[in-house]
Length: 131
Length: 388
Image (cartoon, rainbow over all chains, first blue to last red; front, top):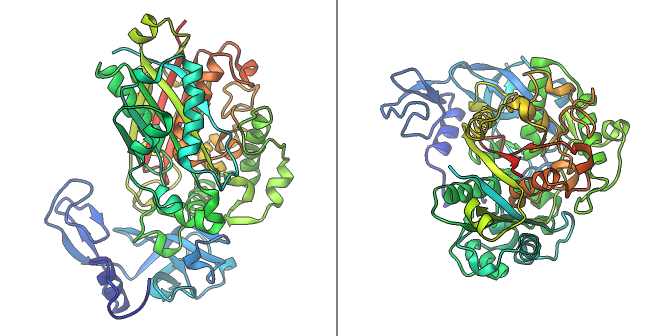
């Protein structure tokens, strides 16, 4: 894990982070209306392969969260931090709640996507900021 | 289909032995299983072995043949990896093989070396059971994932941390007489409530320990057991497996385990039993909340009511359906790859009257073992019954 220019990226995922930084994060929808996060070639629900890229809604709502005190080494300097599962409507995703004291995080809180940076590794992290 | 006899069981002590290799641990468990079974090693036709993090903890892949060698068995060997359900899936594959008539004698089990990684290293290794891109890179740990589920449970059905504490107290109490258990110490509800937080709302006493250990089973066909006059009164009569989306956020329900429900329903139907027939169960309580979700998925408790089962005494050693009489993962320990097969060993010994806690279930004839991987994207359930 280094941030040197020749670091190999994860196609699809790092592209999604790039898009999220530009405010154009997407999700995928199959003809039957099943939804999923990229990168995917196949709908995990029905096997359809013609997946359409649609714009992720601007805000989502926290479904559940936890404040982690015992992290993996990759987040040693970040702890304690709040991780939340957020419902954006068509899809849910997991991210770190930023821009708010961890003690103030609550279920139902409205948040928007903001790509953050790990204090430990400098790697990009999916962040969620109160909207 | 023929039932599969559990001819022999063997466990190492579960606990803290960072210097011991998994090949040494599995060798010890296999020796005990062979001695218990009376089956000669040369009759073994295959080794089905579960292990999760061998590449990370020991820089060792391709562990199947290594473990056959450690056990002194000359037979084809395969490693099964399904995170914490690794040896549950190994058991299921072996059971299926014997039932299909392809094999009569198989060595099944698992091992894990974890404590050599330290707490941070083991936390990192365990986290790879989650989706690396979409969960781990957001800081999700294994306790963190179950904490997400615990809060979702409280929000949907009610309950509080103190209810979970009663599960930890129960499982510690059950482990007191289990000499293989990592913790043979009683705790009180206040100990659990005052313990440092790991991932809120879960604290240190809601989590299973990091453990080294191994398990082994000698499984045989009915006909082999009869022909060789084996003392093997307990059989695996039902097997089931379920799956789910890998990442928690992709599930419709955050506080339920449909994969375990699917596995349980399949295993019950396979054995021709229902949840009401179950006298005891070993369920995958990697965290206290996981025991609640398991009980509900197995229909041993209605949805939303499993949270009170330990507190109200329904699942304690002298309750209606004792759960985790071994101490469970919580107190017995959780050497990940060994756990699924160790649960089969515990249920077998409990039903056969050979377990320190058998007195609590003297009339029991039907037991269940529930093994789960990740946030239950993988689950296996086995039904065991006393046959004679």
